[in-house]
Structure formats: C-alpha cells, structure tokens
Image (cartoon, rainbow, N blue to C red):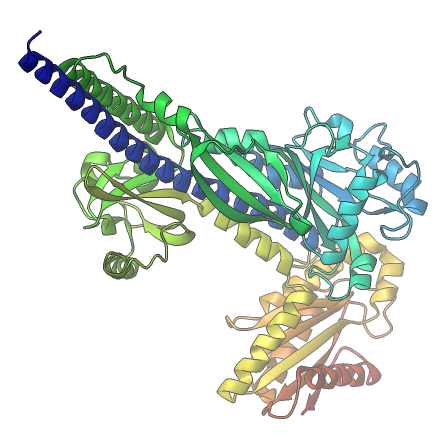
Length: 621
C-alpha cells in the first residue's frame, strides 16, 4: 500500500471520527434543550393538577360551611365534575364529628337515610373514640364519591389508627390541610405513593384564631385520596423523553428526606431540581436524564462505518427521529382536552389544536397566520402587546411559567374565563411560545353558586346573618366616605312563639317564608339589603335614605305583612300575623360605630313592643 493511499485512509478516518464527535455533541445539546422544554411543560401541568386538588378541597369545604346537613345527592353533584376532570383521584370523603354519646342516634339516622347496616368502625389499634379529637368523638366516613368500589369505607373511623390520628390532630390545630402517605389500612407501610389529604371544617365558616376554639368548633374533615403514580402517569408521561425520569422527594426536618416517587441516581448527565409546596410539605422534583437517554433517543453509530455511510445514516436517523417526534407531539396536541396555541415573537399564530377550535369557535385555517389578539378582549390585547414587547426587550417573565386566569373572546364576540399557562420554546432558529388553555366557565359558575349559597338563609331564601355583618361594614364605610345617611330597620314577628305552639313548627317555617317574601317584595332599590337576623327577626339596610323616607318604607313593610292575612288565633293584638318594627338612622358616622346603630334600632324595636306591637318606632343617633 502506497504512502499516499495510507494518508488518504488516515485522513478519512480522522474525518469520520471528527464528524461523529461533532454530530454527537450537537445531538446531546439538542436532547438537553428538549429535555428542559419537556420539564417546563410537565412542571406547569403538574402544578395545575396540584392546584386543582386544593381548589376541590376548598369547594367542598365551602359547601359544608354553608350547610351542615349536606345530602348525598348534593355531595355527589358537587364532586362529580372533580372526579371527571381529575381521573387520578380515587375518592372524596366527608367525615363528620360524632360524639360518643350520639353514636347510636347517628347510626340510626344513617340507616333511615338509606345506609342499611351502617356502623361506626374504629380503625386499627383502637376500639374506642379518640379522646383528643373533640372530647370523645368518632370521625366516620359518612359521604364518599365515587361510592361504587368504596362501599367498605363507609363507617370507617381513621382516628382509631395512631398515624391517622396524629395527622388529624395536626390539621385540626393549624386549621389547614395535612397529608398522609400510605394506604388507609397501613399508612406509610405498604403503598407510599397513595396520598390522603385531610382538610378541617369548623362551625361558623372561618378558621378560629385560637387553637382551643379550633378544637371546640371542629365539625369534621374533607378528605381526598389519590395515587401519586396515577397522577404522574396521566399528567407527565407525554412530556418525558425516553430514558428520562422523575423522582419526588419530601424535604423533612433536619435534612431527613424521603423519596415518595421514583429514585435518584448519580449517573445522570442532566438533572433539573425544582421545589414546590404540596399543602404542608415541601417537595423536590428531580428530573433526570442519563447516558442511556441520549443513546436511546438518537442511537449509537459504529466507528467501522465509512465516512460517507456514516454521514448518510446520521442524516437518515436525524430525519427519522425528527419526523417521529413531530408525529408524537402532533398526536398529543390533536387529542389534548386543553386548547393549545403556538405563536411567534410577533404574536402570529402557528398552531391551533381541535380543543382550541371548539373553545373559541374558529377553524384552524381561520386563525393561522393572524395575530393572537383576535382571541382577546380589546383591553387585554393591549396588555399582551406591552408584556410581550417588555419580555423580548428585558427578559422579565411575568406570565411565562405561571398559571393565570384571564378572559378569552369567542368568534361570536362572547367573552369567557380561561386558565392560561405559557411555556417558551427555542428550536431550529425559531423562537415560539406555547399556550395551554382551559375553559373554566363551569368552575367559575360553581364558585358563584357556592358563594350565593354561603350568603343565603337556607329556610327563607333571603341573605343570612353572616352576610349581613359583612354588608353592614361595607355600607358603613360608604356612608362615611359619601357623607350620606344610613338607615337600619329591625323587624320582629309578634307572638311568634304562640304561633309555633298553636300551629306547629312546619307551619311556623311556612310563615317565616311568607313574611320574608313580603318584606323582600317591598324593596325596590338595588342597594336595599334584607337578611334574616335570627329566629323570627329580620333586618333591612337602607343606604342613603333619611329617617323620614325610611319610616315610610318601614310602614310599607309592616302593612305588607299584615295584608298577608296569615291567621294567628293565639295573638293578643290581631287575628292575623303582624310585625313590630324598630328604625334607626345615622346622619354622620364620624366618631361612631356599627354597634351603636344596631343598639339604637333594637331599642326602637323594644319601644314598639312595649307600646302594643304591630307598629313602627324610631330612634336617631
């Protein structure tokens, strides 16, 4: 073999080795970028699901704050959309406080409600009620959804288990949710990926300020049970590259950490650490990619292949992997239940999946190549343009990487609330932004319904005492700011105890409903506010009305009740149901407080009772 031939062969070998090394470095860098982008998307979606669990607990808590006697159907109706949207959730439970002395009555009432054979069954290691939880009390599972497959959980009292008991104690005393790892039968022993979240519910709605008050006013716990493995599989698997992995580590006291999911290893080429809070715990999310990830993603090419064959196969492998990835991503985008929109740095739309078409009412060909501001209200489009310009100029992220609630605009001009998460992607010389969008109209509607429920008296349908206290503060501040009078009317049904004794409590409830309707129908201004104050007593706030006009309105309400002609044989003043009215007006709130106005109106009501009832008396501050 000639020297020249050897030189050519040696040069070819060097060129082959150099080309292989160059391509390997490029592919490794590309893999690292894609790994980071996948982590960003997966982290965003994981945060969304964790927040959804928290919101579900808060929604259930609001229901039990507003109504102690929640029916099975109400509980099922409330939890159905949660279970449908969060497929990894295994059960949502209500565990009411049942004092030991009330156990037999509670079990009998449960049987009458359709739970034949219902019995409270304390957990492992304790056949008696927990003496530290509300003074000899049980906390049995009474409501559970889905019921199918979870029937055996009905009646189980987790407080009988020492580990459960410690978690319930902690949740009760701090007033926030606490979590427990492990199966209900053997926490922390057999199935650490199973997670139970317990949220305390107190009488009166708000969390009491003092620990002893929290113990006294505890009414039960809302519990959510889900499997962390199911959550990871359903949410994150589409975004993780082959060979990459996720480990979740709980940060403990004094550096005593424990692995909740997956495992960590020292041989990873790339690790990304993130920290997130899950209720009372701090979790480390450790995303890992090892050498086998890079080789599995792009393949290892032998050194023996000639320069030409080597470069050709690198090119073919590169094209194949790119097309396969593109097909996988496209399939994920096309089947996603969330709207996915891709735009560039000029706000021009490049991608618009079927879920986005359904959400906004546009076809894909109607929006591709146009600015994304067509999907926003006018005021929001201006904010978007300013924010994008600021980010491209300074790199300051305000929305990217966060989950926000904004307003979208449909093709027909209707506006609707959406939940938006944006991630950034730089690839192949292109700078793109991907928006994941969810229509939260149903969630917002449910929030409003629950808010209305928490403000409403369940019997009469008018506002309740708690909402009145809030509204009183609002109107007092408005009166102070606008220097306008504020009138308060207190109305009490005359001889109502006699009416109840004569006609019974069922008829008494009907009387209260009729009186509430008559009073409410007498009010015609948008700012007038009526509430049931307690028992047979109602209150009316009249902002901006002086005492002379307030007196006329008070008399109108009194006569409206009298004209109902509800028979009251036991009354000493009339053959029909009547009311006594106390009215107080404050012209200047400076140096005074709401209690003084309430006291004045109550004094006027007392005067009306003393002067024979069925009349209106006034007081002025």
